[in-house]
Length: 217
Image (cartoon, one colour):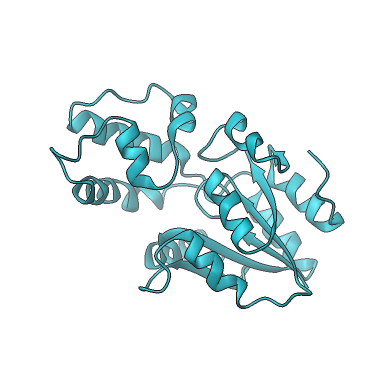
């Protein structure tokens, strides 16, 4: 069976500008230089989130990471419901469903938050499975990728579509073909270092998946 695993934030869900706004608000609160624009954000954002926070200037000896992360989520979550899907996402999800492709959303977000966002966008009926952080057995996206892999058979043709280097890592864990998009949280220059196809739109990704050709760029 042909299967697509979609990352959520930045891939299907257009929350990049909101994330920049929230992190800059946090940086201002602790008197750390802000990220000047989306390009600057995409150059530094990454996983683990703790490393990303450290790189942009937070001092955990002054303010614990856990406190910073909670304050960020307090700013982000309610405002996230105002975000739209990435351009073309609904059409791509609908077309993939019509093609009979099994679709999964897999995210490092807390599952209750993830489900709320998916329901708010009205696409819960477009996907077959939703994986988010929810228990001690899956503490990261890579753990979720391992759990997902256990549900697949050797005959399945799995495609992982994401917007970050971490998504490339998750695809490798589950033995999936990987496609990356530039609409999300990391720059094209960073994504192309993976050597996998990088596209500007989800429509391009679906075309490649339908054809089953990983050689396109």
